[in-house]
Image (cartoon, rainbow, N blue to C red; front, side, top):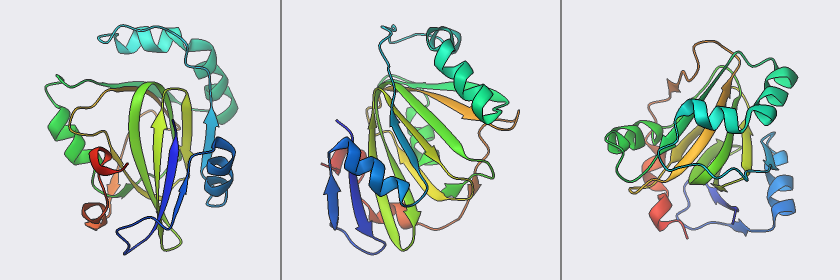
Length: 182
């Protein structure tokens, strides 16, 4: 189940916890973050390739690509035995921005997005079927946990794909990780 925890930038406990989808959408909409529930009903093998995932969701991907003029798409697929899980977790846990807006559609598993805006940190637990769109130049980070399991389709407005501009701020170290967030 999706969940939103809102913290003050220096808080260790959330000031608000939301679990009702409509409330999460409204709260995130207030900071220009789009959060939607999409259909993720394709049964994919744990080892499904990027092409298999993209083809399984081709209709939804094509609709997004046309609507927002996306130039590239890829799939991040993580599982507990992935050989680069620790390196990638560390990379994604550093606060960063992107010059274009970021769209992620979770077709399986879960992950925790953190967005820093207006002196607050919004921790959004995304699950299968969740689509999140983070505006350009918004400070954020992502935690997939120590035993990651998720598949997320990522769409980009540039052919280069995922390009992070790291802030150098260690704020992510002060907030609960996925394994301690509940």
